Each structure stands twice: as structure tokens, then as C-alpha cells.
Length: 124
Image (tube, rainbow, N blue to C red; front, side):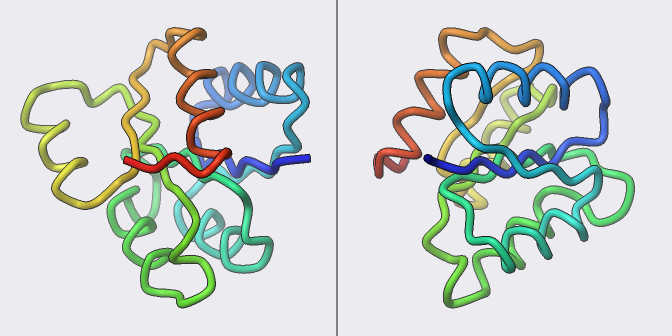
């Protein structure tokens, strides 16, 4: 079973992602802030991290950088999971090296296609 870490501070978005992923057979881990997300990623080495960008402590960019800096966790694909959808925001996400962008509100078909691609080894 593939495991997805969801780093999301909005309860409704967390519930949606968790319910959809679990219904499709994924195990989930959950963090409501960037610091906890980094710690869970390093401790559990999930198959994918869905990272919100706007978080209450360290932002998604900082959490992503800390995951990538760890030799064991650096291989984990990380998708930006965010409502920040301007061209500038998307460029920052791409430039930072995120493996994918999943916008909110969530398009379930695209969400699941991206999760499946990233958990099966397709990055970028």
C-alpha cells in the first residue's frame, strides 16, 4: 500500500484529500503545519507528500527544502497542494523544484491522476 503525507492546515481540504486517497486504497499521514510535515516525512519516508504552500509556521517552500536536504527523504516526490494559482506562484513552485502542482479547489480527476503518477515513480 502506498502512503501519502498530506500537509494541510485547512480542515476541509485535509478531509477531502484524506477521504479521496483512502477510498482509492492509499494510506495517509497528516500534518497541519510545515514543521510536523517535515518531521513525518523524515520519520516515515512516504511515497508522496502533498504540501500546502501557505502554512501557519514554516511555509511549504521551507518545508520542501528541508525534506529535499535530507539524504533519505530527498527521493520523495512532493506536490504543491495549494490555492496559489497565479502565474507567478506557479513559476515559484516550478523553480523551487516541486514535482507537481495540484490546485485548489481540487479537480478530483486531475488530483488522482497526479497522485497515481507520482506514487508510481513518475516525477516532474
